[in-house]
Image (cartoon, rainbow, N blue to C red):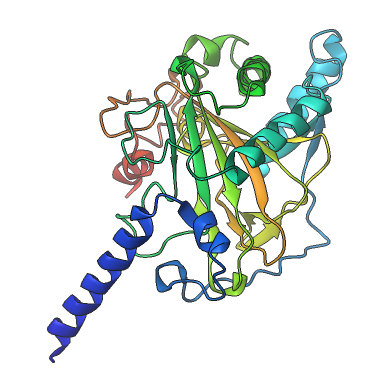
Length: 349
């Protein structure tokens, strides 16, 4: 067998393994439930960066939103703190955000309950991204050479049907709470970059919320795989709720840093499109999730976008906000849709 034939055979074996995994419609949790002791080849990530990332000199900003809408002095200080976090980190914790801790806990419990119920109840497993409710493992399973160790329940909140009875009742309550919180954060972000408080809201940055409820099962060989590979978020902003298991890391100054959970807190990630609109004044951040041998991690990511995901989307194009541009601060990007960093490269290279 020559080299070309060997590569073809290897590719065919990979395709067969991917198809067999997806055909079960049980996701990664199905592998664990079956008693798997070694992870399949399709999940093995070669040359992983070190997982141990302690840095005593690094602090993750914690922003206290107490008084944001009632105290002008507190609001001004909050805007300064958020702007500094957005310029230097691209992410931060928020506390006193207005969502009761009991609702956060109920939301996490509801997502866990969905995944841990009988397989025949989880009837949404599909790769049809035009659906508004779907359950699947790895959106890009057939497009990337290595899969990640997680399953996802995806919900487009502007058009959730009332039919699926196995969706948690707390979901609609929580999505409205997060939407209100997002509107407040967009006001603060607008003021932080020198614009009217309604500027980003008027651009419809909060028009659509897509929620991804991730389930990261315990992994028998966590040192060989990732639960989420390195990525930044292709949205304006993400508000993340995570349980207390940990595993989230952010890439800062050429190293991976752990983001320890804080009870009752939420995490805010600046998205790629907000970096574009601000002309790189504020930054999106690369992050990943490492796998754990003990315990199953739950997280709930709320993505603020103008459109939902899917192959039929006609995503709008954006460019840097004109009011922020000067002769000294020319545009870093052309107008761009999903591939915004290609647009930046076209300007800067």
